Image (cartoon, rainbow, N blue to C red; front, side, top):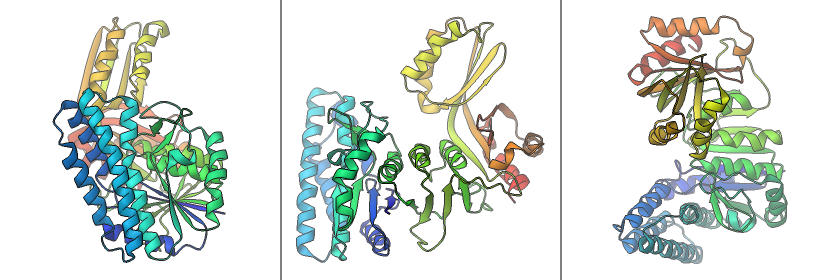
Length: 451
């Protein structure tokens, strides 16, 4: 049986961070597949470089030279000169490819979706080389594998690709499994390739998703997600200092918390591991021996009913009022246009004459354009200074009076609720409030349910 361990960019900050990861991997007795994100800040720098190149304002050679030096610094303390020289050679090879891509964008003044995904993959390619070098330097037989080369196949939807699990499973059994009897595989997260061989990315946070896909394909015994925090918390500790670690979560609870922006686990990670009933454990690189948060199919109801209160800060709400709001023929063009623009809705509330939609505030201009396809709207209102709160827990399914306690606690704290949405999973109650009331709401709810 194999364990899949994923290490995110948030903890891959410097050479010492890679050394810490290498020590954790060395401590494992089971065969390990390590999935890595790009080093901290690298993906964002590539995004900025692409945009600057398309505007004609990027000094490409200066940028790529800096990127190469950044990764050379990450392997500066490697003792074995041959290992270091090999890694530096491969770093420069990949950076040279990215350099050519950026010159293509500069000349065309255009970033196509295909070029964007290919360029975005280089952060992970470089990170895998660095971690392989650190592992080899401490005596681990490690090898870096690039996701597109070993056959992690996806749909051809650039930027938000979805995995082809059956095909990926067959490819990894052939291209990855034979090596696992010999050493530790280091696999690039975040991207794969479509059936035509074009590189595709899984969306931001996609390295978590990659680790779930790989765990599914290998029938892993466990999926470990390594962070610099002890696990899922009962609230954001920067807002609620009394927040505590949650020991056990169901797949559904973890998925809900992920969609609410808890940056512990990308919600799409759940589906592939749930399909194979593979447990997930969130571990801290700062405390490798601690138990972390365990996630599985088991549903653990707690005495206080709710396990966590989460917040999604950067959202906006659209409220439409129309006598035709419930006529599917009238509303369908608008909803279709939202789907065409890849707009994900965080919450929906409807009545006979109105509908409220909550979405990421960064998509506001897209929603306004989509609204042109619902000309019969009698009244339209946008609210931007709002945040979405979610109370989550398996025990809420069968416990009466939860809503009463929830909204009494927020009312007593002087918080005005703008919209309410009961989750289809029945383990989540969502509601919208003004952004400046978030701190008061979270502390009041945590006091009522979790303290």
